[in-house]
Length: 114
Image 1 (cartoon, rainbow, N blue to C red):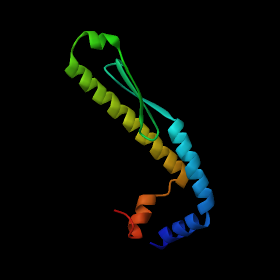
Image 2 (cartoon, rainbow, N blue to C red):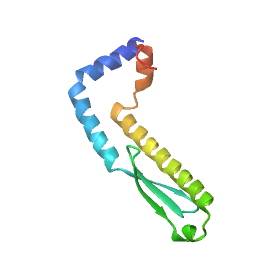
Image 3 (cartoon, helix red, strand yellow):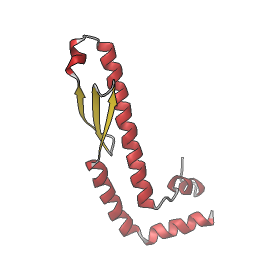
Image 4 (tube, helix red, strand yellow):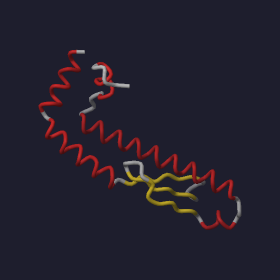
């Protein structure tokens, strides 16, 4: 537990720099683009690093087939893929920001986690 208190003290001493780093990280996440695909690229979904969907591209051949159920399945799969990539990107950014520090573990040990 005392190791976590040391980490907390370090965070408090560097709060201004951490705030600036967080703002920079948020800007990078907003600018980042993650593309999820399904159906061999017939459906492509783009999300940013904050998990916001930005674009959906559908191969026109899918629309001509009138297979709405297939299109719905492919859209769901592509969205899941893009969001998963977005989450992984955000997690990497957070790890880089915290120097790999286990923030959830620290919060849990201090009684502030869920």
